[in-house]
Image (cartoon, rainbow, N blue to C red; front, side, top):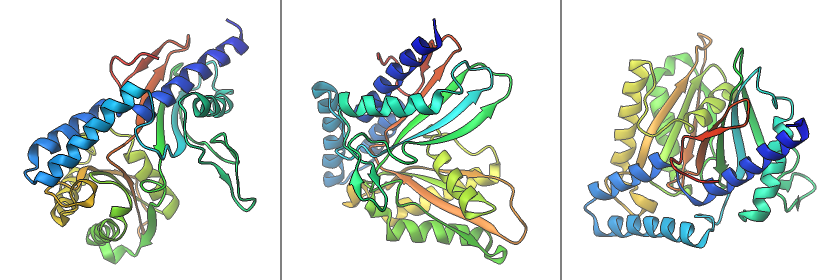
Length: 299
């Protein structure tokens, strides 16, 4: 197959995959929402969860996005140096977004800053966003897709704490943000926390944390313990589904971390709403693919 045909094939697959993720929630999200629905005993909370699942049924039946805000498209790419389309990948992802915008359809969410006009294609200067992890010696390409909505991930926050504030300072930062802007998104939320050495590294990790499967834990046992403590603390606030009250406010808390400078603690928070439209797909060098987030899905 020629390079041009390969690009065309992968563009088409990714356009269909983006459209799918805008309509059908990933398996882990649906499983967690079902679990939380069973645990709630407040009648209003149960009605809200029932409405969420009715939303999913209609999105699939009517072949329409499950939330009107289909967000800014963001991609986390873990690409092997031997993957044949590594050089064309960023451009073809942009074309895939244009194609998905028309065919899904997706709401037009790319406004050129300062010029203040909507491109009508969901692409513009710097959008969609693509983050890269290069994997030496591999010929596979792993892609996470995410629809970052105006109420959830886009209003994330980051700052650098003084070292004396310690892990208590991290906890205070997270809980302050969840009680001040947590309702800007639609609970139950998936909370991503980045702990690193600066605002930009912490912010990137807090977004990366949202790509993890719900129920997974940080490999560091102390970080994993903090994930659980934060989850319990945010649940105790009592936001409940859609902020209408309930025992469970989050689907989980994920912490990603790096080493840091001894005189600074960078911390950031990003949240995904209940309609957490994340996709996970892996391509082989022959462009065969496996969908991990939506088992059994057909493109």
